[in-house]
Length: 222
Image 1 (spheres, one colour):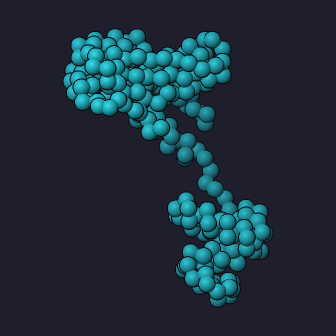
Image 2: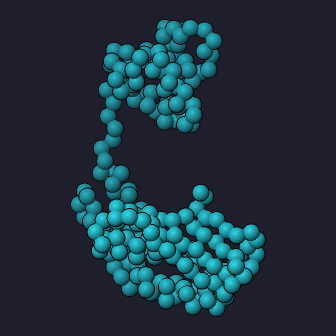
Image 3: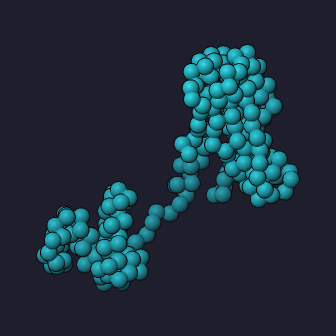
């Protein structure tokens, strides 16, 4: 799935949906939520509840022959909400279901309300909440709270940096060759073998692997 799907053709629904979205105004956010940080502190953000959101969206959609349909489904552990916009012409746009943890009836109800609001607003170009800045700040704080990774040797750190700079496919090939050469992954490799391991990784990156690896010959490979 690519996030959404639509009927063929979709000229009528597209034209009227653009008009409806153009008439929508920002929804007044009357609710406030507080998020406690694991590392201490908290931040708050405001949002529009589901009723306020639908009250603002539905009339504009209806004026242009559009209807917003949301169907919750799932079991006790997880709940999902599928969202579809229908047009009087029969054309439609559907969006991938949003799945959240369910649990007890009250928790499931809250999850469904959240999923409906979280899907309904973006489909018509409106923000789900105004805590983007707070979330970005929170994410940055969490990164700062996490200690930097520690490595046993300078060579191990350099190998990790080299691997991180590769694309996924190249990195997987290098890791596979590394395990074949040393019999273990870098995390299990003995410290005394780290210099040779660094030379080996540089040798692989250089690409001249037609011959046999020799740590002495490749020690100065950049």
